[in-house]
Image (cartoon, rainbow, N blue to C red; front, top):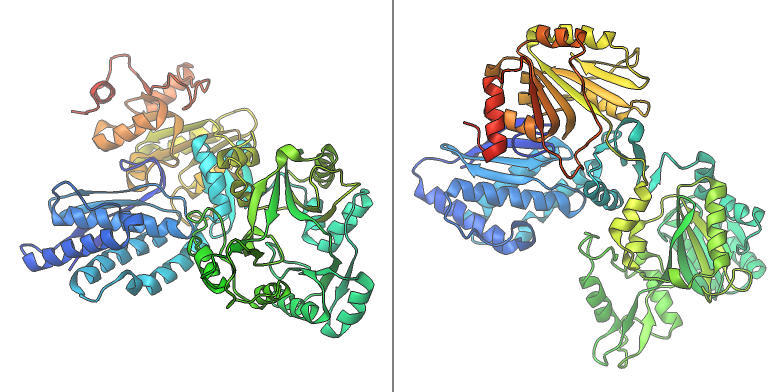
Length: 640
């Protein structure tokens, strides 16, 4: 019914967007009114059933092919960003045969698979009278598993929001992993969630073990509660006798509050908590002295305390009519697996730990609470288990702030989250409070839920280092690409010069061995090298037309090829995505200009300059036909 053909995958700037996109075309059967009716009905159903992805129904008259294309790419972009993802580009336009679609990607095969699914859903929605959105749940679940493997998680997404606002380029550091790179070359930082390559390895080891972390606190002279390790449930009576009531149970090597039960006051509750913790680990389980007070997250970034967030367990308030189970369902109805939509608030699991916590308050899930009575749903306040957050940074006692900064600096951690319990955050730790553990990958969502500005937090985590480095692009004919490689290899530049050409790359005089897993792999290798200060890439016009520019923006482009090799739409891309463009009629002319010191590139201004305007310089001084057309484009937005 619909024929789809993958046309191109662009990895850099292209006529459709400055960022990577896949491009495909769709064709519909000719003169088949029944098919067109089915497809139109399918589009209208998707707009009705998925308004958060598809938006309102089209208001302007469209061909059926264009309606299908627009609906499909909007629906696809929504699915790709629903669980994980930070994509922004989706578009379509009519063609004589049907329509052309383009869609952003983190992984091209994932975006193409999602697009094919969207077209199938349009058909199913149009021809099935029993269709509803639940019928696509299984297909979506399968797609979202792919997204979880190849797309940035929500922590990376928070950083990407700041990177986009600051014009910082982002690329996967290792494909298929959770490691993302912000910035290029020597102006780059690699992040795993909120942890980066600016963090010390010893500090990471110390926080990774709850035992070593507590030993560190004690070694520095700061308070931390007493604990014992337990391997078997039979050890619990003696452990409880030694630690005392109440106590806390937690796995040794889990985060986000997984397996944690607090304020345990009986042996039966301790055994239940032990079994709950055992679900998350086969190692020893920690039984810790309970510290009365409220749980706080102290966030230190680059040695300075950035936020103090009080965490509290989720609660329900009675209305005299609803059971606790119904009130819990109401709380969870505002939360979903899409943490962005639910404001980073997690769903609360109705498990044995929750039921036992309710029993301590003499209620259960079937209890109807009297009006205005408030009860807590869990003993721990971790955001990942349904907790809430409140910013108390302004109330923080100076001693607590100094303690947090001392620990972060000693551990050598650029970003560190400390869990601290106290009855009064305005008191010194000497009077009230104890450190529980340290986190090298502290959730940025805790601060956002607490009321901190997401852009401010993410910018502080990224720091001042991530940025672009100078990037030159030389485009020549295929016959001269070997000459370009020889010329680049002979260049004597300052230390940190990286070049790529003809599927080869080098940094200074050291060649790189790059596996060509995808187009522009050599350029990606240079961008990832921390020692690279300046990049020059030589390629052919065919390379760019087939795969897009190697990156989204460059400082300088030198064209050394015939006019006939450049479609007008690609000339517009080059002008828009480069600070300066200059043209030579041939490679020989360019090389001769180098001998006469006529080729000079300045990087004093960048894309953030308020007076940024692409420029073109042509040799000889008489403008070429191509140059005239480009200047007309700058003047009136059209190229004749």
